[in-house]
Image 1 (cartoon, rainbow, N blue to C red):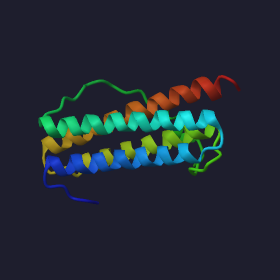
Image 2: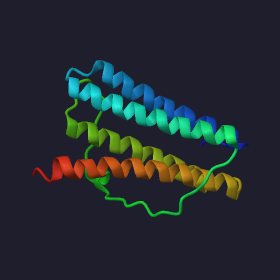
Image 3: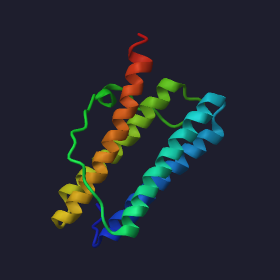
Image 4: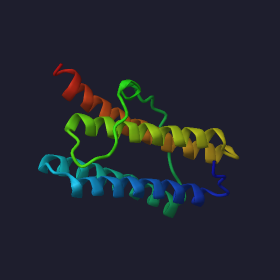
Length: 151
């Protein structure tokens, strides 16, 4: 796993990860065959752009705050199958895919926090992990409303 030597390296890494997510969702939007799915993917891309903007602001201002809130984990992503990003996903599959992406980001930042060289780095990684947990929860709630309640 990559070793970071500065907060700027951490933020650059995190911003690159968010940009990859933006690119992924824009690409899926451009290839989607159904107009509703194009809109959903673009919405997700815009959210990832917002995450990147937040990280950019942290880098420019040199400070960040950590909310001490407990994020609920519905664990829905633990029980869904793996979905590959294809052009013809239905809404349920999109939600499963998005949950898995946010779960992977959460795990990455949590692992980096465990390996952090000092408490400042650790707090930053934990803050980033918490953001990803919020995103995953949003998708889990939507999945619960859209998929589980209909069945």
